[in-house]
Structures are given as C-alpha cells and as structure tokens.
Image (cartoon, rainbow, N blue to C red; front, side, top):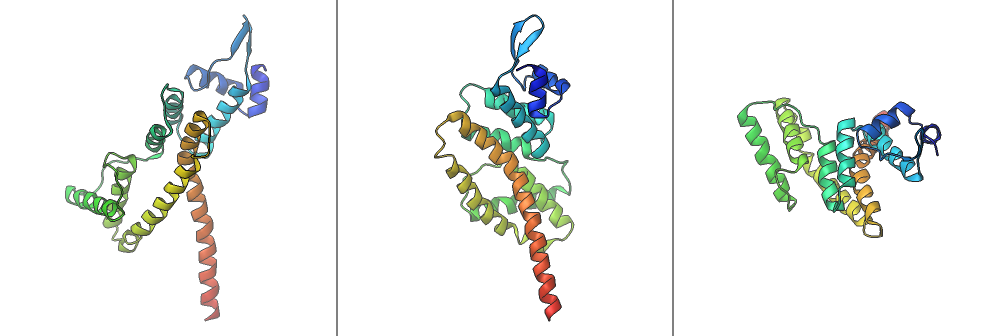
Length: 213
C-alpha cells in the first residue's frame, strides 16, 4: 500500500508517519521506484502500537521511542521489557520535603516491601515514585491514605501475578514482548479508569444508604 492508504487505514496523518520513520519508531517502507514506497501490514500494526502507547497510554514521543527501541532490540525478553515499560510510565518529580521526611518515606516503603515478601530492589522505577507519594501524604497529614498502602499492595501483587501468568499461553516471543509492554503501559490506564468507575459506584451506594437512614 502507498503512504496515503496507510494513513487512511490507521488514522495517522502522513506527516506523522514520516516523522515516526525519521525517528526510527516506524521501519521504512520498501522503495519500489524512485518516487514510490510500499508499506505492509506490519506498518499498520506498528502505527496502531504507537497510537496506543501515546494516545491511550499517555507516553511522550520520547518515552514511546525508547519502548519501541527496546522491542526492536535483538535478544529482548518479556521480563526485560517490563523494566523498560515501567521506566516509561513512572513519573519522577523533583524531590520534595526534608531529608528526614525522605528517609522516613524510604524506610516505610522498604518495610511495606518486606511485609509483602517482595524480592525487589530500590532501583525499581516504582519504588522512587511510591516514596514520593508517601512523602506527599506525610506533608499533607494524610494518615488515612497511608493506611491504604497495604491494600494497594495486596491488589497490585495479585494483579501482577495474573498479568505474568497471562503470557504463559502465548507461543510467539514477539507477542509476549508486546503484551508485556501493553500490559504495563495500558494496564496503568485501565486500572485508573476502573478505579474511577468503581469510585462512582461506591459513592452512589454510600449516598443511597445515607438517604435511607
């Protein structure tokens, strides 16, 4: 197919397709004449993946490019791509609070990890993000939210086990790698969406119960 058809079938404008190609995010098409380039079904899938990562998953172009480079690297494994995808979705803000607050939050996160018997390192992208959350909770005296972290951890542990188990029946390594990426990037988006939906339902039930008292 020509680039115009590729644009029509994916909803990605021609200038964006050319940009993704220049940035190495999209493999170039096959040049069949000096003025004609042909694209294949694999280009459609890659553009759909780019749109999923950026438009649904909310990744920046730079973060999406890093993830795609990892997918394309020889010897990539699903486990290795988890780290790349985690780094892409983890938001690292400027350090806030005093050194004492930061050290306290570090200890609390480490203790949380020990309570749940997780074999993880402080270098995990999520570790620093969680420390920042704990610091913010302490700054704002949100002890109730701090008390929910074990509930979050229980849900996260169960979900992580289910996500990795889902890859067991996938025969293609490429599909496993793509699944690891989408499970991490879009999984964050899906969990946030489901939580908002659940919050509305719970709030409605609480309101209805209060009205009957």
